[in-house]
Length: 522
Image 1 (cartoon, rainbow, N blue to C red):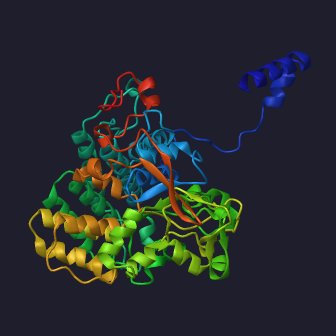
Image 2 (image 1 turned 45 degrees about the vertical axis):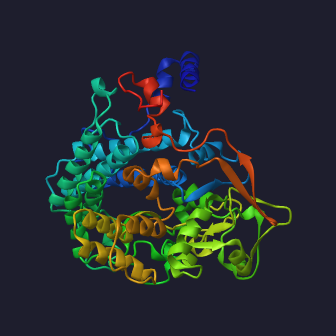
Image 3 (image 1 turned 120 degrees about the horizontal axis):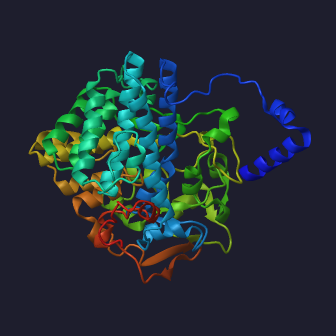
């Protein structure tokens, strides 16, 4: 295209005379487009640069969410039929390779976030309070990205500054170096003295930005993942003792919806807006993909009034998850019925399978806590339901409490471990425990945070993944009007030793001869 444009311009020059062509191209310049050297000078410019960091954070959420949840044992991939999205099926069934698109997308998205953060940390001179705060927030996001790279890839390069041309092909970093980078950025952000804190638990405006307690929560999580239990307990305890956050006490099944954006339980969310004039800028495939498979279902009564149709039915809960709820809470458990529904319960609500239809990748269970509500919509576009304004959840206070319970337990503080886990259980209307084990915490965390991008990395760090995920993908179910059948059997499936780390994407190893592939992926 560029070459064609140059040729056209040359023809015009010879036909009309060079002076005439120059005059036509001599367009008045309105404003200074700026450069890295001339931008980032004012508070306003620093804020604009930081806004780009937030936007990159929101943009990577789709791959971040799908990759981690499909790799866990919470959900089936689902979709309209076998092959509806083969990349997502391969994740869920553990038969992907180094060229997997979603893994590449997440990897490059994390480095895109790091690049945007480095533009702020390297170019903004922190000589005002506003600029200092922008730098501190950028350091948080750089740490967030390195946290994911450390826990998912393990040997990805640390990038803590804008790279010069002779640094464009970095070598692998050690996992220790990645964690050190996370700790350094988060510690500096916390100690900067400029990150805000919420005024109280109901301050849903300050929490839109990165708070001091958000950074402390992630530093505590980083310590926990490294087995630094006393440091983790201390840091997570600071978030708890700040009294700036608490568990949401309203209807549990409304917690993950737009009505509770930035509520008292929110630690970190990617922001969406209920603005019809900016709807296309808010569009996300995330809720479209994970809502129920509406073209295979009939909606009547209350369901027809409440539920947003035009969603695709990826990520359906497994029976094993439902059974874990029943074992802990019973079939009428408060949290269970606010989290999952059986097909019989869906039928009572007004949702049934269309005649002759089936739901692929479904054992007869449906996520209820994240159901697609019309109340969450910027606009109701039932052909392609991609205009929700529910914030994209990343961390909530329940996770802080359960991480703290683990950290306290493993640093021999049974009292505080019990206090933290029982706070979560009380909200779930369960009896308080009188003693707590690591298995209690693992189970509670699975139930409380199912399908919220937490489970997979926990299974890896606990050393449970190879056992729990060994047979994942061997058979795939479908739900029909006559019950559940298992029409798909795979020869390649299940977690292997190499899956302890994700593969460095093929594109990266092809372009960068200095980087080495993770073990088992060559």
